[in-house]
Image (cartoon, rainbow, N blue to C red; front, side, top):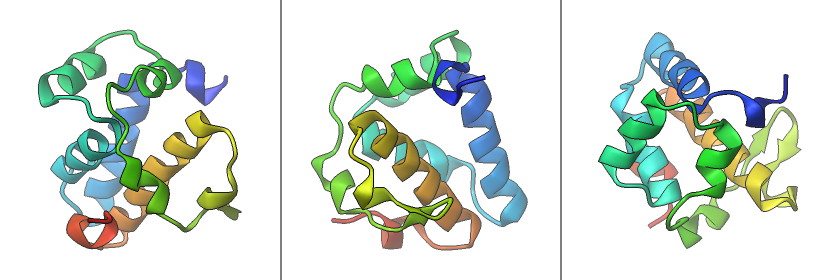
Length: 113
């Protein structure tokens, strides 16, 4: 199944579990997602409980943070900066942030200011 078609809440739970299992705080995934997409906390919570797809969650982001484009690194051997499709770049940027959180990095050290 295409990850973009999967329910946002299901994928999101997996991202939080990865961070918590490895050593982090699951709330950092919320903070990173809010920073990345511009959603309000209430809207994020609603999306987690709704049937919205992972792809639609990113497509409908109210105010994607322009600084998200400054986040660089590789996910599955692919440089995030080299991903031309904006939707996939945003999806992989969140993956990259989660990977770094799971390695014990602090969120304020990951996100550009």
